[in-house]
Length: 357
Image (cartoon, rainbow, N blue to C red; front, side, top):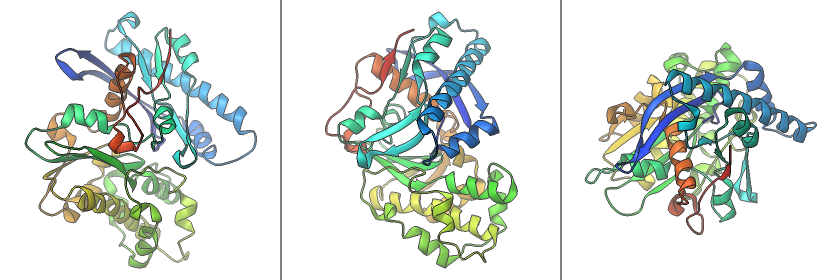
């Protein structure tokens, strides 16, 4: 898994059997992106010269890194490649435009299969979009399989580059959708002004104050008021969009504090609108490590239990990689991987394409 935060690659080795539908997490590996690769991926999010060639080269470079991660994962867990049924490879999203019928995740699954000698399942989102869906979020189907409680109404919030939630009532319909920016703007603004890739524990932003007028402008983005199902990416939320709302006189730390409030707002208003009866809110993704963000969510969601998925015995860092292993298994078994009430697709779909070893 490599997400919109563009920080690196998460790899999870997961074993499934008939008694563990959600699977058992055996081992994990994380490989950070080289800064040069990260810069190239950021550049190709927007139109530029010779995009097709650059995208193809990036797909090959990414697949080389994915192969390295797989090798490390197998070596560290003493697992033979022949014991692996498949690699579920999400790829790196560089365009997400369900509004016009496409999404692009860079990867070369054929090359990855060749380098590892293992079958690859990739391109998970396109089939859902072809059926009229958003192609995102896809992880709610796994949340339902692994984290639904028979008596307690839960919400799972994944705070990666973009935030998304899954509403898990004890019974009845499951819903899920993107809430707005997660770490994407926080990380970009922090790196621009401190040189650090992210604001560790939210400490730098805590030195600033929310700017009410700026927050009002940012929160007026039409995405927040749009009905679910909905999904977002860098197309909607990026530094150029943020800067277009600045006067230029703001303190950088005040802007960071305001962005934290915006991330909190997107999540809290989504829960209040769509999951008002939820009792427990569990956070996963990189945002679970942002102490300031977690405290802000506690404040904005009074009366609800808010914690990271660690409280459920599932590391917030590995839940999404685990989920794409599960989605790859669904593909191999010919089972749907999307929830139509989440993505808005016309019907359940078997997601992804299989590239044999």
